Image 1 (cartoon, helix red, strand yellow):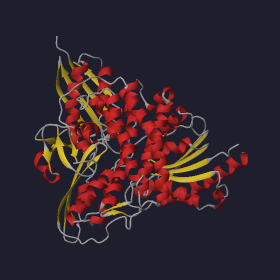
Image 2 (image 1 turned 180 degrees about the vertical axis):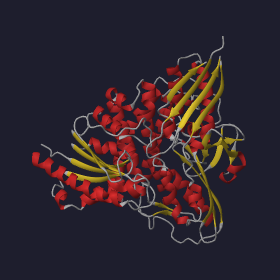
Image 3 (image 1 turned 90 degrees about the vertical axis):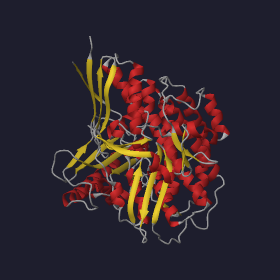
Image 4 (image 1 turned 60 degrees about the horizontal axis):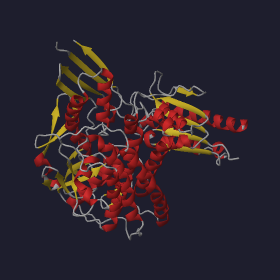
Length: 161
Length: 433
């Protein structure tokens, strides 16, 4: 029987707080604890959800996704969504430039290849989230917290298996 | 009794691509009094951002203009700058730039056909709903898109905002084994691409013939990508340096996106225009398949755009194979000896959505003095409005609100506009007086 696959996907860009997802993935990539499961765990950044995310979702059993979000909290606030009815962030329409996570997850499901478990981590971005190359301190601290949470998810998942 | 209907179609903002748009149609009795495609997307001022930068920075900067067609922006830019600096990169670079472009057409067209346009013609409100009935077709589209991404990555090191292109050539030459592995996949994809052409041609496409001017590049021997003159089916035949003499961009009060007109009139750029003007430059395998569709090319039915995109997918596979099956490692992937000179240069290439024209002025240190970029969506905006006028009349102004809205959405989507947030979800508010 093939080993289950777990993929941690950091969505974002090189800019300011929008970099949060990438930073979490970079932290995890350097983590010995996650590397111990390297045959079954993939950590990767995603530059363009429209063109890259669907194939990542369709080729894993467990997907853990991290992205910067704008919701209602203070910069650095962490959100964790999971479960069967994970209320994924949704945009109101689809274009070739932007397809929301909820649509991609539903599309993977319609094609019979959705991950059986999906966990979404959001990190509240600051008001100036896309200019410059440096994350604000609140978001930087949240990156470390989320990386720790995901480490725990990974370990728990493989302990259960 | 006259009936007046005011239709306001609003498009909400799109995450990551800020923008806002609406379609406003004012109908009085049996005529359209006013029709405006409103685009509120804030100007991004890329041309001003380029000023003062070194010429060598331009390819990476302009790649950021679009996540779906960065290759086009890079190619128009490098050709323009090379024309100023007197660089002739040679046949290896020239061929690999076509491969680079094939990847972008493949990726962009596959995405548009399968995820955005096909649901319209097959009676679904989304690709998710369509995928439940046509899962293999959607998977096929995703495979072709992924293959396009691989081609871009081969030349550009990554598929999104590639970083492999530079003035003078590329930073890196692909390894022979990587090229050979990709050739196997490209050849295996040919039957799938053939099926996409047959599938799109077999759709129940609206039968709406319109009068419009097709504009595209034309090369003496090749299907146009990076080089050629600008031609139309109404006799235009222009050097790219003369673009500004005949094509004029102007602001309209209802849109932040400039409208571009040819001699004061709307025109079409993009896959359908390219095929209408250049089908004699396609290889026999492609023209044979086009003949099989039964569509009388050149076509004046804008809805044949989806078939034109499918044909270009098939062509892109053949063209990439033609080049890559004869691939040899070069001594150098580009020209390194560059002496900055002052001057003005032009670049015009065929982005997936049509003609992409650039003009740069350099100072004698190689710094950008001015830059001007005319993207295809700007050129198609006036044509979209013209099309909407004609399409609404064709479908019948007395039709119900839902049907009119859907048809407007279908017409706009059919152009695959890069102001994509303005095209997929139209929130109709109908007022009757």
